[in-house]
Structure formats: structure tokens, C-alpha cells
Length: 137
Image (tube, rainbow, N blue to C red):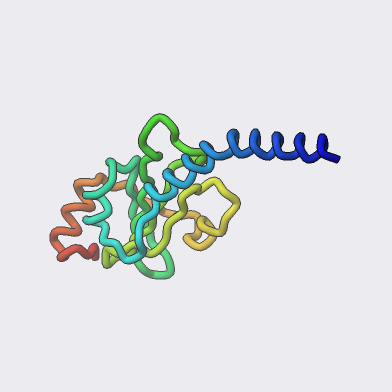
């Protein structure tokens, strides 16, 4: 009985040593990528590395912006299958995000697959936001 308990404890310790660093990297990465809802697009772009892309699209009769962000910084990128994606409303506020867009989620379904997206530059979005006091119309 003691031998079984000893082997069980050793197995748990080894598992913790293997999983601990991975859990730390995942937590750090998720914390780095998360953004509060309502954050303005100007604040978002100023506080983050340059995004991979920005596109304008229409959804339910309103203009929205899809920002494909950068992966986590540092040598350990986490186990994300792709870069995070953020959706901003026409007023410039963050309304939705997906930290791992390739996960089986309803993110793309909520936004109709971003049909009809038109690529924009960061400079164009910043200019639009500045013209409209932080909002994009």
C-alpha cells in the first residue's frame, strides 16, 4: 500500500513539474491578450503591438472593425492556434474578442464570418478615430 502511495505522489509531482510552466505561460499570454470591453480603438492600438490586420465590415446594418492582433510577446507564445481577434463597433468601442480564433467557438458565427471585409491600415483607423473623438463613424 505504501509503495502505491509513494508512486502516486511521485507521479503527481512529475505532472505538476511538467504542467506548471505551461499553465504559467498560458495564464501570462491570456492576460497579455485580454482587453476590457468598451476600450476605444485608439487606446487599444496605442497600448498594443502593431496588429496584423484591420478590416471594416458590415454586420446587422452597422459598421464594425475587425482587428487581428499580434501573438503573445516573449520566447513562449502560448499554445494559441492563431492570433487574437477583436471587434470594435462604429463608435470605436471594443464589443467582442476571441483570444484563440481557431477554437471551435461561435465567434465567427456571431459576426457572419466577416463577409465583405475591406482591409484598412492602422493609420486610416487612427485617423478616423481622431476625426470622430475616439469613435469611428
